Image (cartoon, rainbow, N blue to C red; front, side):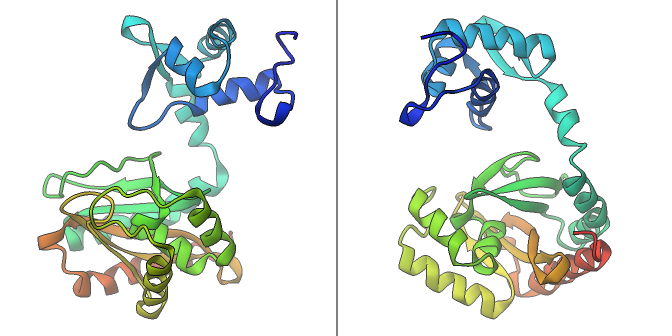
Amino acid sequence: MGADNERGAGGRSRSVLARGLSVLDAFTSGEPELSLAELAARTGLPKPTVHRLLGDLVDWGAVERSGAGHYRLATKLFRLGQLVPRHRLLREAALPQLEHLHQVSRENVHLAVPDSVYTLFVEKVTGSQATAIRSRVGGRLPSHCTATGKVFLAWGGQERLRRVVEAGLPRLTPRTIVLPGLLHRDLERTMERGVAVTWEEAEHGVSAVAAPVLGAGGRVIAAVSVTGRTQALDVDRLSQAVRSAANSTSTALSAGF
């Protein structure tokens, strides 16, 4: 079999581009540096192929070598990500609201968008008084255990919920909802309240409240959230502030989405 005609799952031919993208996709927020052997195992590609692809990716600037024979993603990918028009316009419209929400809450404030079965954080405003949490810009977490993710599930239609359930509901903490029936009822309560709430479902001692950002036609395109220490998070007080920030962002976007 030729080097440029390797097969993927189902026997389909995988192009050089597809194989290169699979190498990039192997990195995660939890494991930002990987060895050649680890990348080969995660992509299902032979080590010589991965080594050749890494050479091309390093030359292009998407990957860089770190110590002890490991590789990590490089800053060129970050620069390209900042050029995505949809997310750039969304962040510009939301940032004043996020900063005001941080002043009100003194906690971590997120702007997130749906990404497959995940919630993807595209902006984060925090400070010295905010609770230390593991979220970061560009990071993803499962939808079913995050407040922003529950926004996308509650208002995103049955098809999105079906995909998330079929992908599995991993338990991140003892309080993570892992039964589809319980998740469905929780999402019904979310729509009734107008905000999504999580209680230590993604991280021990951390809770959150989120509200939807609407685009053209009333479609949910993003979510704004406040995340902080459970014992100090006043959900009743913050719910209105989060809704206000999300609504103001929707207004600022106008018909741009």
